[in-house]
Length: 417
Image (tube, rainbow, N blue to C red; front, side, top):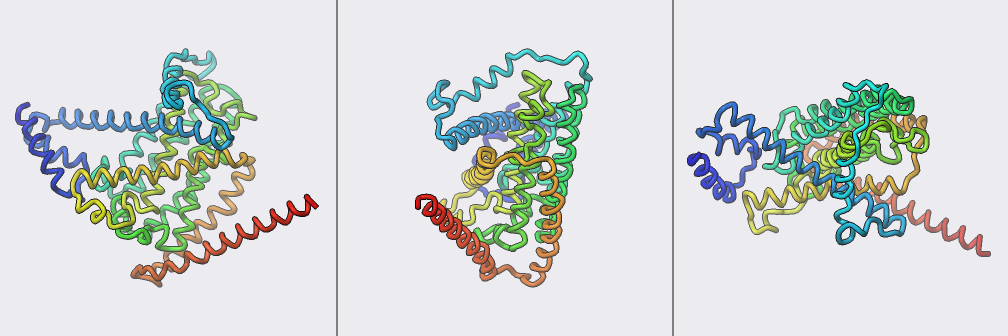
């Protein structure tokens, strides 16, 4: 034990002084601290994995509390009201009160339900969200594992959510829950296609499935981010983001939880802690898909500016901490857009939802793969001059806004006259 403590004391100053770019936090702990101590056994390996799982679980819970509070406040201010204000200053403890309420609620299982699958379903959904975080790089150092097939791993593990939702709907023995489960299968499996094709365009350009290598390909100034590097990747970002909104069942794609027609969807029969697991998984999935979008298109933990000069040549833990904060900030920015969607856009019909996917997103995603490949062949070495293509969509947006404002002003004048 004394040897173990001594290694920790020697390790922390060395870590602060060095810039470890190639090793993850988990790998460094294994090599620098556990190696040669009484924990360098199968017991130490299991113990370290348990500790990391607890850390990730705490992060998931805190992130969910933050997003629940943000959801209510964003909704309130968009509707010109205050939102929760009573529990804590400005209502900041309201999510904690919600957690306590869910924990104290009675756990009810319908008599006619398939009890084994009913109990297992929320844990399958939660475990899928939990496992995906292992491959999300919060920084060059703060990543659980840098898989060389990280992108493939994320797509494969996240697909288990569909299985959990179908289990919940079928096991509930409720026609509304079952209908919601069928909608979930149709929606999630369909939108995984354009989402995966958008990822494939990035993988083709970077020539790697490793999430860290994808981030490394975007180092430097912000115009090296993949969203700006290629006009087809610019479009692929929006296809990915909108498909991910459908994947996490958020407006305008929340067909599986359509309260007006399906009561509450697949989790109608759930209460208490089991309902809380579905709730937790939904908000974590929002953050996860936003984090993946940040990694693939928005430079990951790269700020897009000469960060070393800004921080005065900071290395080690300070640099990694700043990068992790920047990564989380970018991801939360995309989460805010999802919250914005919910309180702005009406829900689509089922036929409209599927038409958007099969008639528009999938053909455009295939076109993006072809276009991205041709663009990379023409412009083998990326140069800032290729950013000229950005002026075209920006110009179109500006002209469209001016036209819309002009028409609105003309219509007002017609009404007043």
